[in-house]
Image 1 (tube, rainbow, N blue to C red):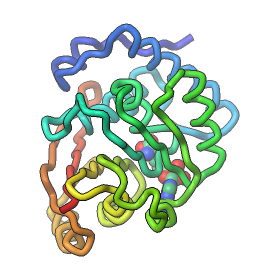
Image 2: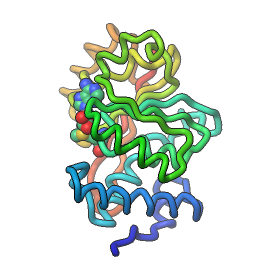
Image 3: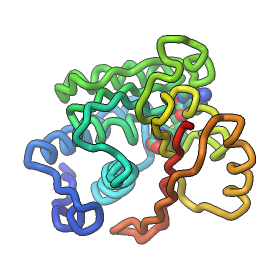
Image 4: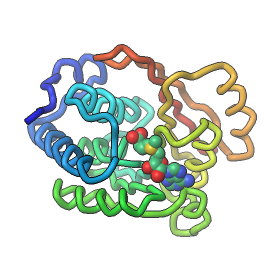
Length: 222
Ligand code: SAM
């Protein structure tokens, strides 16, 4: 059976955060459950232990380990277009005092995620089947979250349109991007004012195993 690599030093050196033995157990369980479910239906193409560690675990946490985020406070978080639970699930494991809502338009994925959360004893996670455009019309969810996350769902403008309406004033949206160009930046800048947002920071990191570029755009709702 393939197991996740032990890369404690890399966590510490790159993100200044180290998983506890309990975190590592739950990450391993998460990995095994996803591999198992992947045999029944297509959840993710990232399945080798090192790829899973880097592209699903490390990348998910890299987006939120930032001085801008009050890590010790109990935040209301939503992960939009979560798919197999990324970045939301690793974040819920690492920060059990954050309440994490996983949103996806595919019912089958949401059912999987609710079962997975039960198996992993993640009492701070709930998954909802809905489209982001629909959810933001619902008063219960509109302007509700401290933090909205989105990875691999569409253009930066679309990601902003999906996230910011769900974030409360003063809250943050984090867009997980690979390559980031001046053109994308200009396009986003043009659309941000109508969505009551501003770019707070853009963090560029190199992934520790395959040396790929990642950008984490942090937007503030104003
Ligand atoms: N965020 C995950 C990741 O990075 O591994 C999954 C990315 S996957 C490419 C995109 C996911 O977004 C799919 O699971 C899809 O069902 C969901 N999705 C696409 N449009 C959506 C929308 N408007 N509202 C909610 N979910 C959406």
